[in-house]
Image (cartoon, rainbow, N blue to C red; front, top):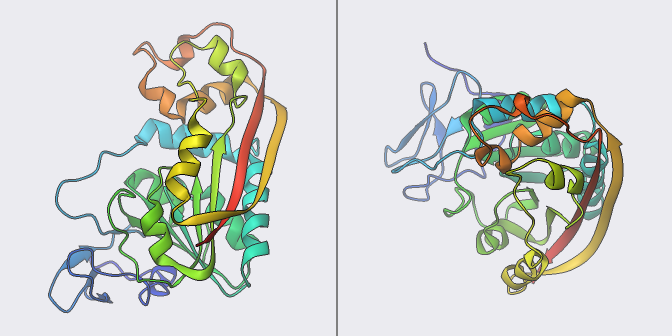
Length: 282
């Protein structure tokens, strides 16, 4: 069955580039194709896969994606979503282009698009399961399968905002695709983030105390900070929410095979503590 081109994805044809040859892409019988004939299928779920060659290993499997969807729907990370949207809205006009790298289920991208009624958004992720959600997270959200560690399949200097929320970073590529007056918004945990969970649940990934220094080192050649917000609060969780919170993080890969539900006592409240910084290109 031939898949029609989603309107949100169609709005990004001026920005998307063939990852093989760098040419523009156009719709062709349920796919995107460049003049050289490189073809990328559009899924019936609404996203396009631009990945070529060896496939990237997805960080989010089906169980992690379901846990992430349930937890984010609870609103427990709503303050983070709101500060991301605030930083984006402060930086750019309503008519803007937002690219969320490592977008997951599109939760933060949708929050920005709600704050910017004239904006369009593109989510990039390696997890096709997460991209199914992103493609339906907002009517102006498009989704494409891509690996952040490769050169982004995007034109130079046409993006107003790059979001990087709890995701890997590719500073030189972020700089290349951003307009001179654009913004990179990076959200990362502080050492206090989920401290109660990390002290009680065996196998939880620790937070490197040198994380901030490393971030500054890799971004400094390309960006300078324009402003940082600390988002910190205590939130009360049900047991199911605790298990979803653990299950949606990279820690899920490190926990034993008995399943998260077999853990006994888990905290009923956790500290959420993140830094959100808006960076301007140098």
